[in-house]
Length: 61
Image 1 (cartoon, rainbow, N blue to C red):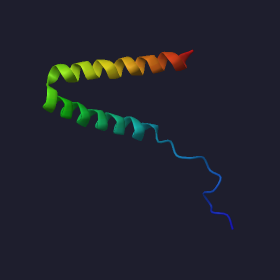
Image 2 (cartoon, rainbow, N blue to C red):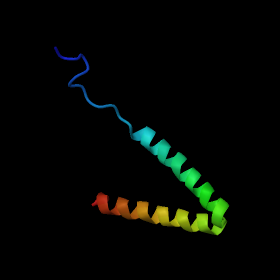
Image 3 (tube, rainbow, N blue to C red):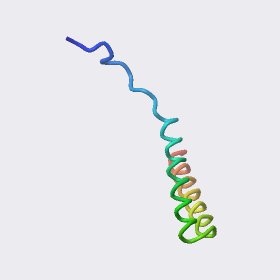
Image 4 (cartoon, rainbow, N blue to C red):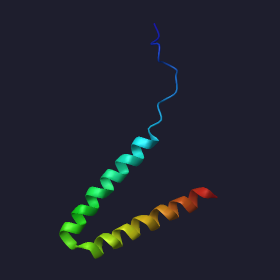
């Protein structure tokens, strides 16, 4: 016997993924700030932004 939900599409978890990425990056930046200070957080943030931009450029074309 088939389950009633079988064959339906999977739920969209994109918004949950984006929120959890934000939560995780926040605690990682807080940890970096506590250990090495604000310049290290700024440098880490710049590195993450650059990596995201490069990934976006790669998949845009």
